Image (cartoon, rainbow, N blue to C red; front, side):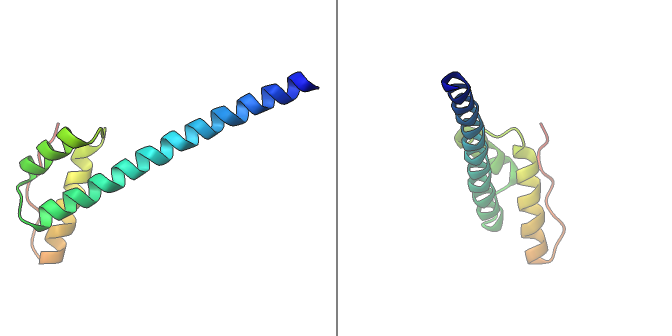
Amino acid sequence: MIEALRARVAEVRAQLARVAAQVGQDAEREKASVVALNMASNGAPPTETARYLTAHFDLPDAPRIIADAYAHSARMRGRAPAATPLR
């Protein structure tokens, strides 16, 4: 019975570690999205935003974040989005 409990505790710890990692990734992505939107709203070119995000965040979907930020900024200003760099 004790071994079964130890095994269950190990499973729960592994699940908690996976959830914590996911929460960390989501928070990192959210921060990068805010930075990208701020840069887009302030008129920075998409290439500058891409360089900044690459230097400060570890994101597999940085091009999408940038595209979304510039599209949103353009909608807020009432014009078509600027071209965004693709990787």
